[in-house]
Image (cartoon, rainbow, N blue to C red; front, side):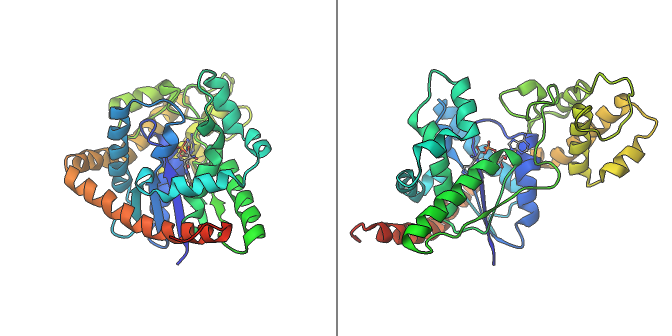
Length: 329
Ligand code: TYM
């Protein structure tokens, strides 16, 4: 069976970009593959976190993964900090990654520009920890949104470099990027990707339906005079984004969407997309709330997950330690 792995940072509430770019696709793939889905909590402390809020969001994220259709009986759902091999392999990979290649990472450049008062070493070596997350489990594919592609690519470079020195230690994974939903843009600034740092243009998975509808009704369309629903990414990015979201949640093609809204303006499109999103998210929100009331169940999920994940991860870590010459214990 092929192996799949991916994670999300519990650094904010999960949003529609995380769902359409990542979790929705994980759920669709999770029956056919051997899957590892984790909460990337180690990564979140590259930025200061409120400890109580981080704990709460991590637990809510586990509940949401399950609510989105990831089955903890069939998949390994775990918390990154519960599996110490991540930090351990992360250190080793730090020593096989060059200053120059980390300096070129666009996310580092963006984040350090935005956080000038906390450009810490973790922010810089983040891609090495992410490479460790991935390589420990020898996955075939890493399903992520478009913005993580560069990180999966540096992971491949690191793996190839290591394999070149020591033989075939790591499987070199492929990024797996969905056809629709790979890059969901902000509703009120369609030139930026949807992210929690711009909450007005961001739809959170657990948000109330009326708030979601309000955000869609206020979505920025375009200042073009044509006012018709037609796919034109360059000149009508706001409309293209709404069409992309609608396509991802309904499964309809762009041609079908153009036909559906033929002769109707943006005033019809916006609430229609809003309603489709509300209906997609409703069962996820309800199920997340139900699961959050059962803490004992969630604990049993992440404990079993940590145990399974540790077993797989330790195998790779031992191999690496042996290759680099550490004395076996
Ligand atoms: P993170 O936590 O920023 O995002 C989690 C996932 O959501 C996707 N995503 C989006 N997709 C489409 N449109 C958007 N607007 C959007 N915003 C976010 C991301 O592409 C990602 O798939 N470094 C990772 C977490 C990580 C990881 C890993 C992922 C740590 N270790 C190992 C895979 C494998 C991150 O910060 O993603």
